Length: 92
Image 1 (spheres, rainbow, N blue to C red):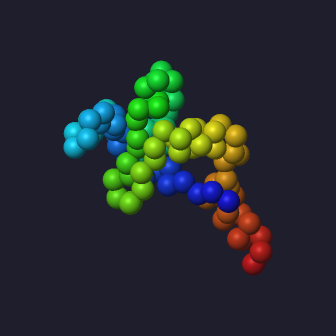
Image 2 (image 1 turned 135 degrees about the horizontal axis):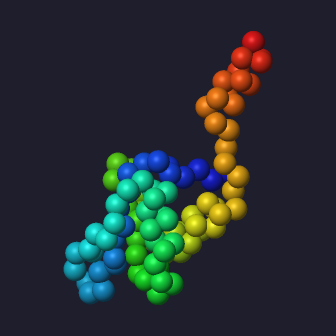
Image 3 (image 1 turned 90 degrees about the vertical axis):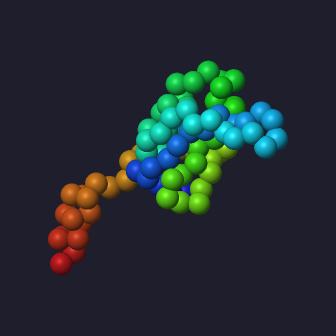
């Protein structure tokens, strides 16, 4: 099972085209909102961005962003906190 930190803060960067150049920040928000922003970009632009997590040592390149987009489109949401509580109470 793949787990993504969807609610964690992240930033979108345009990849620097020349060696030693600093990537330019083009967006920020939660990982999920950053993926939504990237999904709205042209395909060519999507291939030239990366998402960096602010508080975690994670970076998603264009291929990984594509996998994340696929995951968000096909996976069903997990249980809500209320549903987990109902199960827990029923087991007691």
